[in-house]
Image (cartoon, rainbow, N blue to C red):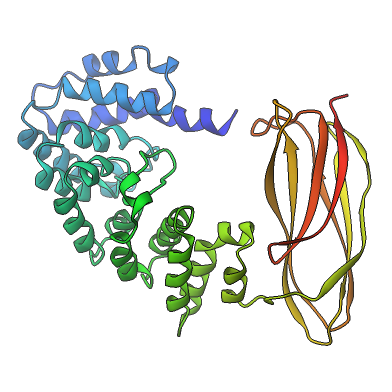
Length: 373
């Protein structure tokens, strides 16, 4: 079963029953069976986010039309949520429709709605629900985000960062922050040394998002953060810069302590096949030789240019090895790369290129033909 199918099944019959159990406690004259019948109608045919949208519409038939009254019900949901009250574990997506309901029906009452999101975010992150408020009520929402950076609850602190990620996966892209990320930096500044790895990882991912549009700003910020950095902050910086490492930005390698201008030659670079059949592995053999007496700190990666359906190519960098190459050392390396059929990549016949990257710079390349049979 695919990961996508597993995820959407977390919003299936069991989740609907769990939501109805809590609503039965929080709502008077609530018909649990009627709710379940309505919620389950057609649910199996929908994908994950479609299920969220469907359940929000069903919830609207049972929660008060006045959002002020609905907010009281939603806050009481938190008080009766089994994960928090009894320790019983529910599917991680169960609360998602209840939280995103706020983004649909509470958008005209931002102060109250943001308080509801803060209350419910420990049940399932409100990172998706808060984005319409950032777009339509920026000043109010931004002040909440700043305050949340010092909240006692790590879920709330994480929401301050995760909610304003410009390119949050599955979330609506925040184009205002893609264009100008400066408002995000004071939030991340407050969270960079948070006690929670859960929060620090969000800070790193936020910076990784920003770097896709404003690499120089992220590099500059990380350079300032590296001064007297703790081990935890150094990890955050490395995680934040991971895509820039793949892209081969020279400033990033120097910042992370790698050799700025490697003095290395590659006397041997071989592929085990120049004609490879789909379903087999490509073996990449490389020998590195240092041309200096000094030790060099190196990141060895390889980039494959895959043929697309239209005959053009698209490239992807794959991690290989981080090494310290001693003075005048010769080091052989071998890597096997699978070209077996997978669901996340479609292969096409044609000329593929393999490049060897050292600290982001191409040092050698070779071609091979991929055949479907």
